[in-house]
Image (cartoon, rainbow, N blue to C red):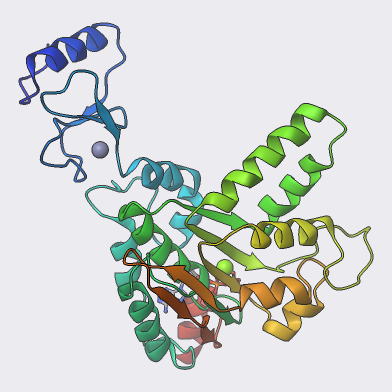
Length: 296
Ligand SMILES: Nc1ncnc2c1ncn2[C@@H]1O[C@H](COP(=O)(O)OP(=O)(O)OP(=O)(O)O)[C@@H](O)[C@H]1O
Ligand SMILES: [Mg+2]
Ligand SMILES: [Zn+2]
């Protein structure tokens, strides 16, 4: 039987019935429980004193994305066994960045990243992280992304392989598959925050022409950008010229990726900001220990 967790009688009875059916997983320590809510039950917060009224837990997407991206997070030093509620991912990843590594201007660029975060997720302005390989781009983008999810922002993290897969499905002869992909992509465009990691990291389709912006993934990227008014953060090894030349990206996508961003604030003012570009060039930190060893 459940211990008394302070739930209303009706809810406690319902939980007990669920428990008997082996369906229960109530979380009593959800940090997103509001004052008028009774707890967190399978991703829903029942509202106190109101029968059958619930709100979705603000952390559902945060938990789901943690699960989906657990392996990538582990590569950035956030272990798979870590409890994402006890040790929130954003601050943990942020704290694990060593600003003294051999990456030019790392400390200054981290300051600018934290200024970007401080401006708030409702404010205008995209973020670009451009630089060499193994210099904390993905690590930093995860730190920012998971902080946004923790704050309840409806975001999505995508890579080139997600774009390639979706563009293949869009083209499928199976109508159901192409219809589902279309529906899913419309959902991407509605997200308040889109993250594109490792843009132009490889060629998604070797058979296509090598013309800039010529692949199906490039066409999809352009479509997604055209239909998305929210905030975007992206990372790439190539600068804007390199991305403009890339078959999977192209000049028109670059124009939008690095473009100004405007939002209308709650009091009907227009906030407009240029893209903040962080440049990170330096030694590959995947070989940090190797380089340390050589110095000794
Ligand atoms: N300044 C740093 N302090 C601590 N760890 C770092 C630092 N820079 C990089 N790392 C670690 O190095 C590894 C590579 O970093 P990351 O994945 O962010 O590279 P990247 O810039 O995205 O590279 P790529 O362009 O190849 O995708 C990760 O394990 C990351 O945690
Ligand atoms: Mg990366
Ligand atoms: Zn909750």
